Image 1 (tube, helix red, strand yellow):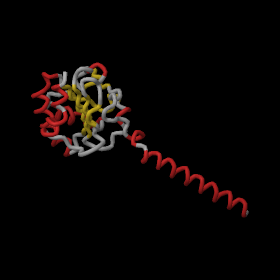
Image 2 (image 1 turned 135 degrees about the vertical axis):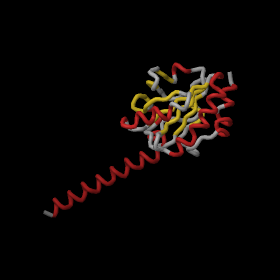
Image 3 (image 1 turned 180 degrees about the vertical axis):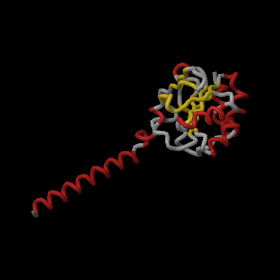
Image 4 (image 1 turned 90 degrees about the vertical axis):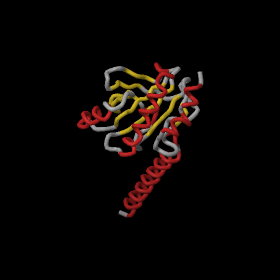
Length: 179
């Protein structure tokens, strides 16, 4: 009985050590959670847009791309949409692509379509995108900016989550000016 109890204690200790190791690996390795890195090539991203078209980062090389993950229930997400629209209207002719990726549930598709009808930039449902290299999307809003060469220039996992007109001008405008 004593040997059985000791073996049980060793097994419990080993399981706890394994759990601790996994947790440490998860939290100490940023690339395990956030696969993007500023200054590195953008991970693959493809989307079947709400309007039926297909978009990919690869096919948009030579353009500046903003990918914004949002949801209709997310107040900060909804607050930044007008700034995205104004900026997009001012700069789309310079080669700007903006894709708003909704994380809403299927039951909210009509609401997402209603919200997006007020904006002229592209939108997609997250379930209709391939974005594994951008990490597990758990924070909203979350925005990535990719330059004309396909290099990540803003990684939304770091810094303030919100975007406004001034930040767009500071980060994106210089990229649009590059040829």
